[in-house]
Image 1 (cartoon, rainbow, N blue to C red):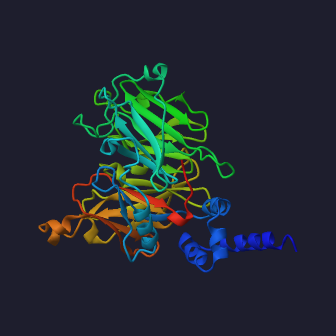
Image 2: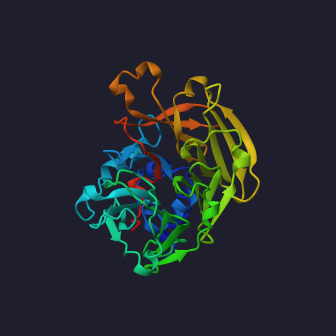
Image 3: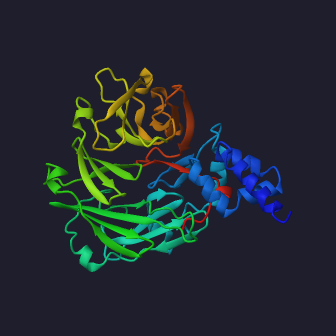
Length: 408
């Protein structure tokens, strides 16, 4: 009989870990104290989060007045999104002052990466912080060592352009650092990149080793033929451990395979032939549960003014892409479509302008984001940002506060 309570907890955990979604787990854990105790234990949550996809919770706007805009009703994630917005500090006021000096650069697995310009005014080398706005924790990364930094010469701007506080000459983002399910200290990695004349420079930081090291980049000639203008990377995409950038003014992908920590340049012009790729958010990658990478290409600059989505898949980025399907969006969306901000399972999250009849009304010019079901072709409102000047926006996926663990 002594082992009965432990056995009961194990059986309950096996039942709860099989509920379909995070929302269902939240409802189940409210049924009784035993369910709540099991469903909120760190051991159970690590297992549950490894088996279930995170929820689409809102939109992140690095250059907006409010960094996080939660999903709106009637979206099923709206209650969890509202709880997160109330519980977390997305103003990042817990970072070293002044708080307004920090610029949001990336997010992954509940962690957020921000940086701020140094006193010397460098747009490449900045103070870097990795933080958790829900638990209000942060770590400051050590500076890149001088011997590594010496290889960075006259890097091209990657964001901004007026030399202001938000101008940056580096691409910096979070990457996975192996499984930390069994450890008490969450692990993370940071990649730092700069495009210089004649070369791309990249460094890798691991929270486990607490050290920066250099990565071997591809040859510069493969990145761009416009060496005088430099290389400006487009929107960053991720799937199955690989990061992808459209290289501006080319039909090439810069790929970083973090499983091997190596860069490659992939020519995707056969797929994009005949399509005008003016913006990097016309292409996005998704992960499928069976290991395939799904690529969605939005063909919007067409003579018939229609918007067409092409769905391709590949197992490895050097493989030949297989066309899965083609979706013609409604005709009236052609002039409203402004790009894909993210994807989650069988849904695309897109930005649409307001209909033309509302363009003269300032109240109706807020940035609107919608969820598009690629199976049913149904469109539903997801979030709204009270500013028509937002130029950057990304889908944020995660778990409700009750199912979150410290990530830093």
